[in-house]
Every structure is written in C-alpha cells, then in structure tokens.
Image (spheres, helix red, strand yellow):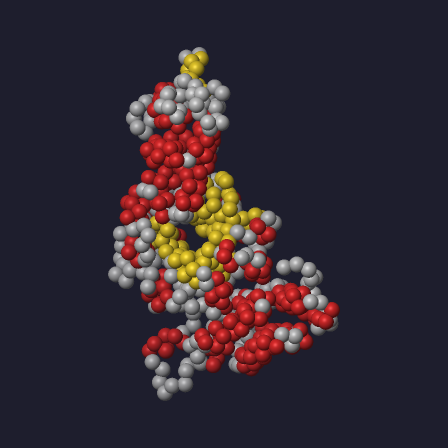
Length: 575
C-alpha cells in the first residue's frame, strides 16, 4: 500500500476526496482507520478474549448471528479489500476488544468523525450504520467501566421460560485452565472435552497417565527426551526472542493483504483449500464447525527490521544455529493442527497479541516415529495416537511466552484464542541424530517433491553444524544410520552430492583428531578416521566405486576428491 501519508482521525474530515482518484480515496480511508487502530490509547488496560461483535450478540441473547455476519463480510469484500480490512480490523483489534463503554464510545466517535468519507461509499455507509447501532446498544448496556470487571461479561440468557442445562453451561464465562505447575494434565483434557470444536480431536478413553504437563516433567521423562533429541521442549520469555518490538496486528494485516491469494497456503479440514477470504473472516467470527487457517506466510517487510530467534534463556539449554526462514501463521480460534513433525529441524515459535495455544508434544523415539510413518496420510493422528505414543507432554502458551521445539518433536496444536504465530527454523549441536531417525523412518515421504528434496539439504546443514561444533559423535552415528538411504539419494541428485562432499571436505581438511569407536564396530581409536573415509565416505566421493585413496578424473561435482597421504605415521586429507 503506497502513497498517502498517515493522518489522525481528527484531520481526516478535512481531506478533499474530489482531488484524488477512487483508489487513493480508499487508501486514505484505510490509512486513517489503521492509524487510529494503532494508537496507544488504553494499551495498559486489561486485554480480553471476545470482540465487540460477539459482545453485542451476547447482550442480545443470541448464540450466533452467522447469516448477518457472513452477509456483512461479503458486502465489505464486494466494495473493496480496504473496506473489508477496516471492518475486520475494527472487529478484532485487541485495543477495541470488549472494554466497556469507553471503548464503544471511541469507535462510535471514529465513525462519526469519518462519516463524510464513509458516505463516499454507499454500500459501506449502510453497513457502518448497522455497526454504529450495534455499538450504541453495547455502550448503553450495563457494563462496568472497570476493565477487570468488563472481562467477566456474561451473555444474557435467551428469553425462555427455563434455561436448559446446556444453555446454563453456554452462559458460563470463558475460563481456560491455568498452566501452573499442576501434577496432572486432567484439567486441560476436561476443558477440551467440554468444547465440541476440540473434543473431536481427542481420544475419549485416553489414560491421563500417558501425558504430563511440561512444567511438571519427571526425571524419567526428561531422560527419555534427552536420549532421542536435544531435550524437552522449553518455554522462554517471548520478549527476549525479539530484537526489537514485535509487529503490530495492523502491520501483519496490511502485509498479508499484499500476498496474492494463490500464494497463500490455506488449510481447511486438514486439507489445502482456496477459501482464503473465509480464513480472514474467521479472525473476526470464528467457526467452530469448520475452522480455516493460513500457514507459512513469509513477510519480508516485517522480518527485515525485527529479528526473531533464540535468547539467553534458551541457550542455557541448547545453543541454536542457522536461524532462518521466519514465517507467520494466521490461526483463528478453534484452529487445530494435527500431529506432525516439522522436517527434522528444531523450531522456535511465539504467538502475537491475544493469541493463545495449547501444545501436545511427543519425543522422536523410534516407536513414535514408526507409528507416525505407519499412519502417513491419515487424518486424526492425535486421537488415534494418544493411547499409543510415549513420552507426551502438554503446554499452554500466551503471547508472553515462546516455545522451543527440539528436532524431530511430534506436536499437535490447539488455538484457544485466535491470532498470529511466528516461527523460525534452527538447528543445534545434537539435532543431526533425530534428523537421521526422521529420514530412517521415511517421514519425508509425506512431503511434496520439492520439500522432500530440500529435506536432504537440511540434513546436511545439521550434519555440518554438528561436525563444526564438537558434535562429531552424533554426526558420525547419524551419517552411518542413514547411509543406505543417502546412497539412493546420491544416484538421483547431483546437487545434493556436491553439497555433501563439501560438508565432509570442510571437516576433513582440518585433519581432526578423533578417538571414538565406529557405530558399525568396524574400527576403534586412532584408526577410526581412516575407517570412516574408506568404509563410509568412499561411495560419496567416487562415481566408479574407486576408493578415496585414488583421484577420480570422471567426477563432475566440482568438489576436490579426497585422497589419502601418509605423513608422520598418520592419515589425513589433502586438497
């Protein structure tokens, strides 16, 4: 969005719309609203979970007004993307969320001040009139001006002679369980069982003892995770992960509007969808029957000035390397991402603004990975696997917290309060081993062709980090564990072969001193390095089956061939 300079709402009424084109009029109108919405008024007031539209419906005693809301969104989209963004921004921005009379009066004044601009769009004028009437009803209702009191707003009961038990439960205020150090996870599961949108993703006969709170993990559970990956998932302060202020709701919204719809990865019912517009609508009006989310958006304008990644608190547990590819997800309330693994990479994720999530996580044990491989392509993995998978933990995060997921971690995610999630991939000194197990179990077969090819290059990144940062033992056993899988890759991808040769070239050029026993039990002590070259690298560096001691003139990779030279009684690699 280019052109107009941001103006305050007070000055907006003086704009002469006759002097600019219709597109610029829309831009001026949009920029004015976004400038108002991004104001800092009331920043320290209590943030709440429901928007103005929902509060109005509660006061009217209705469970939902889906047809009306859907019609509003459709009309706004028909006018212009700018009108749609203004209305959805007004409905969802947390500065205007259900804070009683003060917030309602603010938005009423906003619409009145800009009435001359709104009148330029006849359809928008009619729609804003309805919105204004709804706001007046809310402002006139008996709502306390105290933000703490307004948070506990209850919807009035429908006008029936006697409320049913189901209606009484529906009228109860939203009270998600806390994530204190409780000894059991039962309260969370009980909460999900009462929420139909989440209930369908759970095993009703699940044994609570098979899942524990991350904050109350036992020593046996910690040992299980450390044996198979970097360690347990870790919760750290989200603010420490940002090198600057996180992006605002408006900045995310505007940048998302610049992405072509065809480039968005939209998911509906676990499958890719083309309903991007409905995903935007659900940020204002969640649909528990058919939640739609947008995954993996890359927003360069927001990432350039706001680095996101590891922090000192995380580095006390694991040092992260190669932090790259920052992506944003838009997940309305009721969104659910089924059990999956993000390649074999580690990841750091944090919600933004009011967004809250519950994470179900399992370690990449051979048992768990084999179960996932056997259920490749199936839906409802979490519900089917809850009683079978081992080592599971659950955690609740708000925008104040970021979660580190170790390499290979199986995880499913519930969205309690809709919003945005930012994530970045990384690796650690020990990540190469769980990555190898990921490849060994053929988990990459579930990816598309391009992503599957990239997966093997990401494995080389983890291998290189381990070799260069005192993680040789994990690197050696990981390489040998998937050697047969990689030999198949060698035959079909010359680009990968060149990259793999460079990783080993860079390591062996330093003439490392290694005193370990080979995982294949083929050599020990000082003979290991020679054994590694002859037994486990020969196939990589020679296209004709020759050993690494002989140069191969037929190699087209452009990488220097390893050859052995005896010097001072030791074998080493020369260029």
